[in-house]
Image 1 (tube, helix red, strand yellow):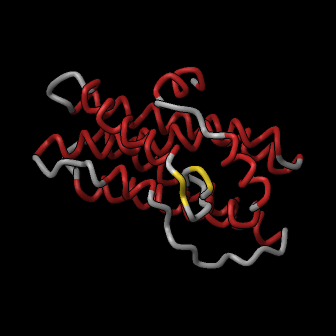
Image 2 (spheres, one colour):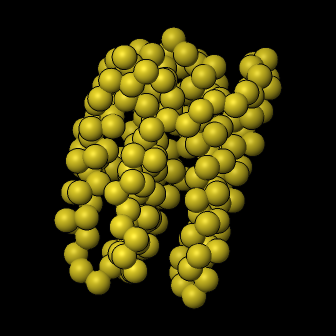
Length: 198
């Protein structure tokens, strides 16, 4: 699945972001917790908005449960390491992608699912790159997240294709261009999905 994810993403995480992650592990973990919580909320939001789609409800309910489990696991790691779970402002990444979502009928759902796929794919790519650079506990944890998070990416893409009235490749390319810009542009805030450290 990781090969599919790397083919889906428009670029790799820059080395400068990985270096910043090693130097800012407390912030990395705090924002990772935030990302898991937001991912669960996004899945729940889709469940509330699209109640007439049983396959979406099934997949999103499972996704939300898993994301909340991951949230709890990260919070436990923070506690064990004596890191206070403080509020961090969000990165520009998710809002930058969501700014391209059309409000036009069914395409809104398809775009929302494509954005979900990009967020999950980028998370997987960063877990895979980070894991070998971290201590043994975090290497195991991030390596273990890859399986479920890659399934979340696959669920989002499957649903986007299912609910689209046409091939989604043009929409995917539309979001991919923005995703590459967000990942490669200088960013003054270090977050799990931030761009190149300014």
